[in-house]
Amino acid sequence: MSPELKGYLLLAALKIIVVFTAYNLGVMLVIWAERRISGFIQDRLGPNRVGPEGLLQSVADGLKNILKEETIPGEADRVLFFLAPVLSFIPALILYAVIPFGAPLPIEFDGVLPWWTIVGPLLGHITIHGPVPMVIADIPIGLLFILAISSLGVYGIVLAGWSSGSKYSLLGGVRSSAQMISYEIALGMAVISVFLLAGNVTLSEVIAVQQESVWFVLALTLGFILFVIAAFAETNRLPFDLPEAEAELITGYHTEYSSMKFSMFFIAEYSNVITMSALMATLFFGGWDIPFTTWDEGEPSVAKWAATVVMFALKTGFFVFTYIWVRWTLPRFRFDQLMQLGWKVMLPVALGYIVLIATVVWLLDRAGVERGVGYGLILFAVNLALVAVFLWGLDRGRLLIGASRQRARVVS
Amino acid sequence: MVLGVFWVFAGVAIVSAFLCITRRSPVASALWLILTLFSLAGIFVLLDAQFIAALQVLVYAGAIMVLFLFVIMLLNLGRQGPSDLRGWPGRLVAAALGLLLAAELWAVRTWAPEEHLRLPEGAIARMSEAEGPVHVISDALFREYLIPFELTSVLLLAAIVGAVVLAKRRL
Picture 1 (tube, one colour):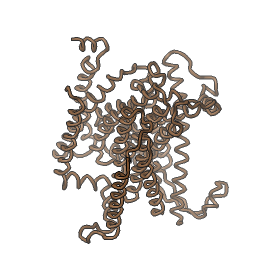
Picture 2 (spheres, rainbow over the protein chains, first blue to last red):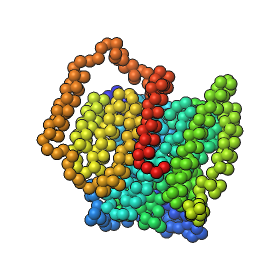
Picture 3 (cartoon, each protein chain N blue to C red):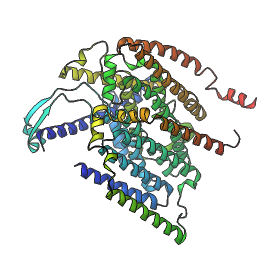
Picture 4 (tube, each protein chain N blue to C red):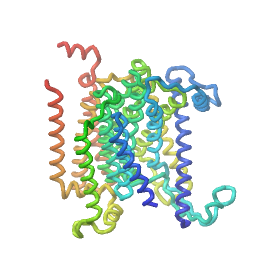
């Protein structure tokens, strides 16, 4: 092996280890944050006993779950019952591999690593020629990879529901498949508007385009709104948590699961929340871009790297907080309302939006408007008008109606 | 190294395809089918066709999910049913068709297509290097073959409308 290849492989292994450790720690922190923020919103304390401010609560829960007895229902299909938590856990984890989380880090190294790194002497001579992109795999189909892998997440849930051999679990599994297939379409359609503007599906390119002009939340406001709604449905979070629906299904597809297997579903859910938040930040809020300055786009340096990583963490954290915030703001949808929203509102609006944005982009390019800030602001004006129409048209008692009015309509 | 990875994917694809057609339980069959298609996606990546690989997973994973729902809802929760292969005529026809397919594969392997029908060596890799894997497909699909593409979508639309009409007698 050449020194360059060895350096590349070492860096790849390091990135994988560091990112997934940080990611799993992030999941732990998000679980803690959800419980504390829920506590705050409901005017109670939340877990605050284990460690400072209860930070180690998730560790304690994890240990408890490993030590607990595992139960397997008599009616269960044993192989699939075992496989289902794994199938929902792995897609959630590998999704993160394609999301860039910082500016490139300049590393120049040529020689043998010192002895205290343990692997250094084994590797021998290695060469690393920076700048190193801060993403595990910058694959040319970035976003399609995310759509493809996240479509596999539903298998874990459906198989869990089916293999448990219990009615509540089965209902939860079937509900979730209907929900996730429906909203996957809206999610993909919302993302197409990003493709139209970025002209590429690579996430690092999407960020680069946003750095040159404006963040896509301005240029594609309605697309962002559609993406957020679909993302909430895809992650099975309130107001769309019908696969779990404690009140009707006793937590649905994972009713029969106990101990660490139950934890796996939990971890998968929060991993998905983090990934979707990171995607919102990347696609619509410039990724690791620092706003109102072009300092972070110049020659790579360690300071820029650190600042952009913190910036990305802040943006992602904000959307994670939004997830929790929404949970205690909106009540759960009824299933028919969910389907109506998905097929009769989200899909037509997303389709129409693609056509409109494509037309506007075509017109602007024909008129010879330079790609840049002005271009983005024109699109922003168009989007403001569209958002006004969308929000005025949606939920005025016509599309989503309460039970009593629905009954009145059925009777009449 | 690429060859080694190819053999892994190819082996998994063949074994899981075999299991897909021999399992009695429809749920197990569907799951093995997913594994087959996943390995095929891996082989597409090795051929520098990442876009096709992503579509393979995206489209087929969704499609098999629907199949899955049919199994759960219509086939008595997917518990084992009787075999579809009844009597010797069925087995004989199956064996004959299998032999025919093997012969076709052998023919493709032995008689390479003529020179003017083949792409030059490494052409696809160079193209996706220059324009990105998505542009290679989309240029051909939406410029050169736009009308066949649109006709196919009309065909699919007709199929969907037909299915809805058949399923819902009273619209």
